[in-house]
Length: 367
Length: 251
Ligand SMILES: Nc1ncnc2c1ncn2[C@@H]1O[C@H](COP(=O)(O)OP(=O)(O)OP(=O)(O)O)[C@@H](O)[C@H]1O
Ligand SMILES: [Mg+2]
Image 1 (cartoon, rainbow over the protein chains, first blue to last red):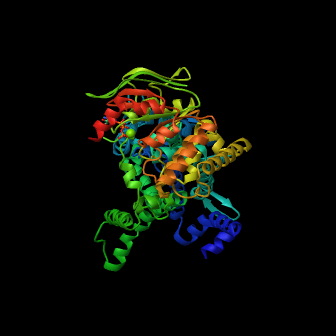
Image 2 (cartoon, chains in turn purple, red):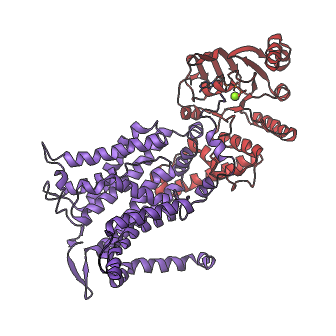
Image 3 (cartoon, rainbow over the protein chains, first blue to last red):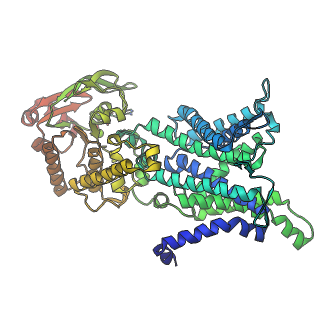
């Protein structure tokens, strides 16, 4: 079966294209319109996960503050396209600005962490993520920049040539709502993100990232400017985050600091760890699973009512419990991820010299 | 080609190098020997920018390289291998060598994404040159193996190919035949001679005294961080201080 598919890549491509094209209608007709929104979020999280994967998966820099860049993109969109400042720039102008701003902050926040590794890097980036959120929470005075915890409202929806991606439209006799339009917009950005992530991975820069992940000292000894190449990873990952933030703001029409808490960073990290770090299909699968699973688990309340007549356990609590359990089971049975890259598979196999090599003292001198 | 002037390196109270000076001439194979812990690797690390020097100067073709960043020194044409092999274990052998092309190529993020004719040509050149180098060190057809899966001797060869990919004029090898059998050692010695023929100057740390004496144009001996002898292999071999250091070290 898989071999057959592999022998006819064009057929697979066409089938996949058709599926993606009709997916929202399929979903809307079978699962209901609320699931089309879920679909939109799946795409958004794929972009986010692909971005974080550049930093964590490609370059091996554990970043727990990734959501900060998502927030920056979202806030920039809100500032430049809402009544908050009375500015209403079109989305095609704001989105690249958001990506650029996030990329810039990626460099600014990355620079002080360059000498840190592993756990230390994780803790510092986690702090940065929280700092950005706290800023957003408190920048409502003396000048009201972010409107504090209330957040910013009435953000402009994306509109193309006077056609707004919000409200209801009649298309070919069907009533189509915002989430359907956003689906296609997000799909376009997701495909572009996948394309960029793939191209980056198989390039001179991608190899330099991998080299740094494998052995930073050896990478430097191969003439790689480790500082610049790491900052580049931070910037590229952050740009993906900023883009997703802008899309999120326009889609929701409302943002507040609460949307950008630590849990969000961890969730995105879980997606790439779960799916298979550094491996694009794995990352995509992780994003799909971790977006769909919590939504699906919402039905647990209904099931309880149907089976027992009343709700015994709050579905929200149970949702988190089942979610956590799923994660733990995953980590036990498929620690390298659902679709691991050959590298990750090997790292977890850890039979031969690798572990030894990692323990070899840092600068090649024996004590 | 390489001038080391009065280099000292201290780790806290420990003086790993004390006033070491040497001159490596272009086209030579220069041997660096000495008992364990003499400071040979430390000297390599100072020369290639992994360590700063406590005092003293190092020049490559009269450009100062002490206290410069490692990548800067590689750009100047000075590459190295490591005593404890440091390959990118989870990348293929070929990818390892391709990483070595980094300082001699240019494609950036935009080039990677757009992959225009220029980038594609560069990628092909990186690929082809890397294959050539694998072939040169005797690793033809091992390109797709993960570096960490290679046999020990092959890993050492791969490190040399990776270093060669940076186009060095001076190549420092830290115990490149350690752990090899006599046949492999002979192959490696042959490889070093071929390297010298291509015009690359070699700096060689080695414990195998016979190999060093047979191969090197000049030899320096380190002991407790000091240079105790330098000269042609035959004269160094007869130097009483050297004999004393080695016999004293062996007890
Ligand atoms: N980073 C470091 N911190 C502290 N001490 C160090 C460090 N690097 C090296 N040394 C010490 O410097 C001295 C010289 O070590 P070095 O590794 O240079 O010796 P070597 O000549 O390469 O020995 P070998 O033949 O065993 O490789 C040793 O005493 C070592 O413990
Ligand atoms: Mg040594």
